Length: 587
Image (cartoon, rainbow, N blue to C red; front, side, top):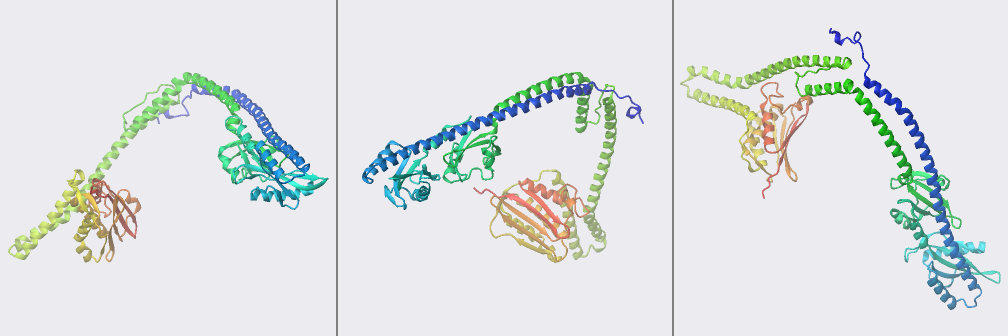
């Protein structure tokens, strides 16, 4: 063996490029540790700051909503006191309600109920509000103090509202209850107004965890549907100091922090996407990352320059040689003089190329011999029988020349066998030359029937059922009838030859929107799967003898018509050939 391939006795050289990479890796370790620590501290500080800020905003919003309700309650209490000191409860108080509603837009309606729940003054509330009023009156009878209803949407103008029930006391006795419908449009405006960044929005959640106000335009409809805020979320952690990070219903990672309200059992949630909430932290991390990349590039540049001649150049030389080898250039040789393993690899490559060239020449010779053998065998098979038939008849000619019946038989035999030879030579010629092609609109069903009629006698002789499943309609295609008939004849002939006696060959056509599908199916012995892939190739036959030109020519004819042919088969069950041709555009 050549000593240059003996790795045990050859001196191994260390590559400067490897040393450079080791130095680069060593320098990156402290940089990466510093970067990780800096990123962690930045993230922690930003997280605390963002959550405290969002919590503060939610608290401010809760306080403003609470203040709005408290101020409205103070006005309502004042009105109730005026009603208490008034001796006229009917017309005068009704005018007072209208005046107050005109002056204070937050009051939709005001009505006075008796303690038994009947309306005393101004029965103008909607059915839903009236039912809530009945429940509030029961609570006022127990507490003798103001009571607030749950949130609801007025059907009249789709405005958010709650009811405020205020006791009307005369002579230290609860005489009646003032029910005021408080409009919460101010809360909606406030929620829309308060925003953090571009995407941070407020939500107000009811005691039933339903969204009753939101600054997110995508959730406005949730308010009217009484939809629960994030049904799959455990909301208990939202109202703690750290809030909660989760994937919302819009597949956005968000940070949400909440605050409880004091007057009502509602909660205010500030929700902000993480990419916006931690934009500053992400920016700092990006800067650190860019700095690390710059340092890495500088270090790699130094390592590349120092190792170019010992590492990069040999690799490129070998890559180029491999590419040339892949293109078939087996005469290409490499020249590497680095004194290390690359030089050994180059020598090994040259030796491999030399051996591959010898191997290729032997394979070409063997393949050429095999091809010539297949062609010679096929020619001998396909021409042997016609020539033998002519030869046999010719030998009898001297003896039976005066027999008129024999001369007639001789003439018929010679014509038939020469016709077979001509067909064979014609197929062989068409395989390597363009066939004459004169397309015109034809009825494909007519071509199928004519091709089947040619083999009717042969099928009956072998007791094979030749079944036609073609509709009566005209299915027009643009084709050359003569060569298309030859293609179908090849398929029908093969199907009959592959089918045992008492078998069946089915010819069918099926029309689709823009193409027709022709099927030639037999119940013969079938074709093994491994032979299907090469069934349409030149000089390939499933009969074991002959050149196998029929299917190759059939495929060429179908493709010449712009169609496609495919085959499926199962051993022992039969074979099916499927042809697809475009329908003719008769316009």
